Each structure stands twice: as C-alpha cells, then as structure tokens.
Image (cartoon, rainbow, N blue to C red; front, side, top):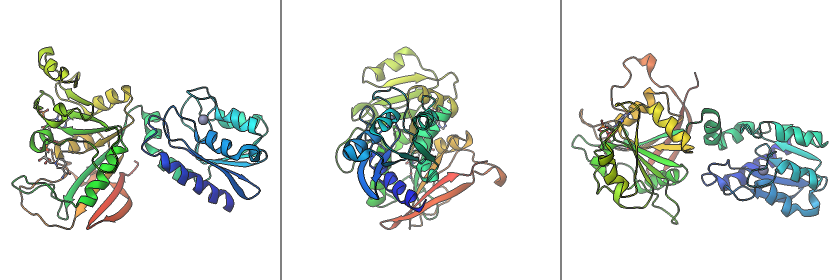
Length: 362
Ligand code: NDP
Ligand code: ZN
C-alpha cells in the first residue's frame, strides 16, 4: 500500500504537466512499474492527443507485460478521438491497475474498471483519491453540474480595499502576485467581469507573462451594452469576447458583431448569474475566472455560484470609508447568511499573501 501511494504520487505529479491545457478533457498521469522499476510514464497534454496510458505503455514496451499501472483517473472504455485505454492495457498484458479516482463521464463511469476486471486484471481503486479529485476539480464539477467551475479572484490591501476612495487601484499588489494571477487566467477557459470594470479600468483580460499562448475567452456582463466600441476587450482582437446583455436591439448588437464580438441576450432584463452559467455550460465553457468588480462578485456569491476564492492581499493599509471592497452590492444582511469558506492554502508571493479558499459544503 505504501508503494502504491508512492507511485500514485508520481503519476499525479506527471498529470500536473497537463493542468490548464487539456480542456475539455481532464489532466491525467500514468506510471508503469515492473519489478520495482519505473518502466513508463505518460501524461495527457491536450484534447485530441493520446491519453496518458498510451504514452506510458508505449514507453514501457515489452516491459508492460506483467506490470502494475498507476493511473490518476479510471482508464477510458469508449471510442473517443482515440481507442479505449482499457483495451490497450489488456492487450499490453498488464497484471494490475491502480486507479486514483473513477471517471464521472457517463461514457466511462465504472465501465473502464469493469472491462479490466473482466479481462482478469487486478484493479484497486481509491489510492490518493482526494488529491486526484482536487487535480481535476473543474472537470468533475463541469461533468456533474453542466455549468462552469467558478473561481472568484480579487486583490486587496490588508484592510480589505480594492481601490482608494478616489478610485485608484493600479497596482495594489506586487508584479509577482499579478504574474501568478495571469498564470491562473491561463488555466481557465474564460474570464468574466462586469461592465463597470471595463468602463473604469479598460482591462485587456489577456495572459501577459511567459511565452505567448492562446488567451481565454473574455466575457462581459453588460445589461444595456455600455461597453465602449474602442475598449480593449472589443477592439484589440487578442482574444474572443462575448457580451451578455439583458436584451438589446439587433442594430445595437450589430456594431459589436462587426468587430467579431458575440452578443447574447438573456431571457430577463436583470441578468441572472444562474442563466449565465447555464448558457456558458451549453457553450462548452468548463471553467470561469471571475475578476470583478465588486457588484459582480456579490451576484455570484448570492447565486451560490462560487467554487473557489483566490485573494491576493498586499501588506498595505489604504483606509477610507468610501474605498471599495472585494464584495459590494447589498452583501448579506445577517452573519448567518455569510458565505463561509475553508482555507485550502496560504502562500506568500513576493511581499503579498495569497489565500486559496472554497465555500464550505452545506
Ligand atoms: P462591476 O465591474 O462589478 O460591474 C457591475 C455592473 O455590471 C453592474 O452595474 C451592471 O451594470 C453590470 N451587471 C450586469 N449583470 C450583472 C449582475 N448579474 N450582477 C452584477 N452586475 C451586473 O462594477 P463595480 O463598480 O462593482 O466594480 C468596479 C470597480 O472594481 C472598478 O473600480 C475596478 O477598478 C474595481 N476592480 C478591482 C479589482 C481588484 O481585484 N482589485 C478587480 C476588478 C475590478 P448594467 O446594469 O449596466 O449592466
Ligand atoms: Zn483513455
């Protein structure tokens, strides 16, 4: 058992290579061990490319016969873009398969494990399950809820201000913290902000660190289409942009559509976050990075739509009764209604603190 955890941890580390770049697929790692020696490693790196098991078995070659395979997610049993990995493991003659967690995808969901067992392979399930579930939390949420996994992110001072009373907000946190936030942007399918943030900050909402990569989709909540036609998100063509409105005329939308922006009209005049999430789920958006402003944060929290909260806190005191805070709007009137969080991690990044937290499961 001790050995199983050791090799599964290695498989999880290998899987991490794919995190943030496999959507709509999960990140998966596989390790092949024969006679106490690691003979193959593999990770799924991109949708459409081979699964982790394929690389690992290929590397192991003849040594896969009689080996134990550690895989962070149940091997697939269906013909997708690639043939089923369960069949591959059977053909390779492996003796035992250790699986961290089952695949909730209804096309697999236990069928991969059943197939292996039918072929006489020993299968153990659940080794480092919590770590494996955490690694693919966005994928698992999307499969179960059919709406994107929502990460709410903000940067504030130690006294909880996101800007000064006069509205100055660039920059509260260090460049190291901002680079970390850009890395997180890159791990989501889409970034969402409210129209006031576009009007006050004119953000680009692109990933600007390291090598150039595909930028996530940009989404603006904008009931009456107040986003300026010359805003970066409309004009710069650096990424796709969708504007979600409360229903606007075709002429109004046309000016944006000519610039390549998609304009959606929601069924209600007041945009309901739950409708937005349903729409994005239907459009295949698996993960959403919500970056403000404070009214939008309030709406997402009230809708119970937040899966993870990321706060960057700078060691600064800004003060001012009128200075805005990360969650505005009406807030919750009673403490009993407040969104309670479990802190998952606390890190320091340069001079700042990063807190990763998740709403307590009720
Ligand atoms: P928001 O950016 O949250 O935009 C709110 C507006 O979005 C609403 O007034 C509304 O305008 C529109 N909207 C449409 N649907 C919804 C909905 N369901 N829920 C909420 N809003 C909706 O505005 P804020 O004024 O709260 O925040 C902007 C400020 O926050 C800026 O000054 C910016 O600098 C700061 N900020 C700070 C960040 C930080 O981390 N430090 C990050 C991001 C912003 P309409 O009715 O016209 O549709
Ligand atoms: Zn597979």
